[in-house]
Image: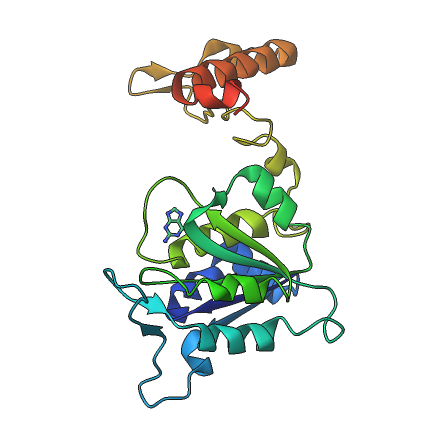
Length: 233
Ligand code: 6GU
């Protein structure tokens, strides 16, 4: 998979060289490129923002640098195959879930455009739609200062689902959200720690009883912490 990220703070993404995703890059499974939006400015101050038409607080990202970035990274039809999926992180977008991560992990080329300030000139989204499938995606119902941290989270969630990135694919199956429930609790040695014993069933060697207990724990936790998941929302 190829991933291009456009940001005015490219160094945010230095962290993606670490750990699993860094190894995936080194192994050639993940071809990740981070670009400074200011590469596509031409004035002395490398300006990326301007005041909003119609007035209001804050600044808006100018369309021209974004247009050039899209021309470079998502060329017009016939010039590049396949068409990329172009993702703009936005608190006004659709919710990012494990389902979204699974879907995006099947794509060959993702382009992430990180906005700052009050947002990007709306015409950029319309133009981007001529170059690929555009998705506005939110991490949740709270506001971050810019899309960078959200995109880091998305790339980590997507990247670990690409075959070969996580060494043991079985570890992907028994996780929170993979089956619509929260994960069951885990324990390791010692069997008693600071007066706290490990639940007896886990020491029983009875695999059927262990599986049943874990399922019950999943349901109980999901009921307590995330009843919305059980309501099928
Ligand atoms: Cl994707 N961007 C920003 N700026 N804030 C957010 C978000 C994204 N998701 C939740 N809050």
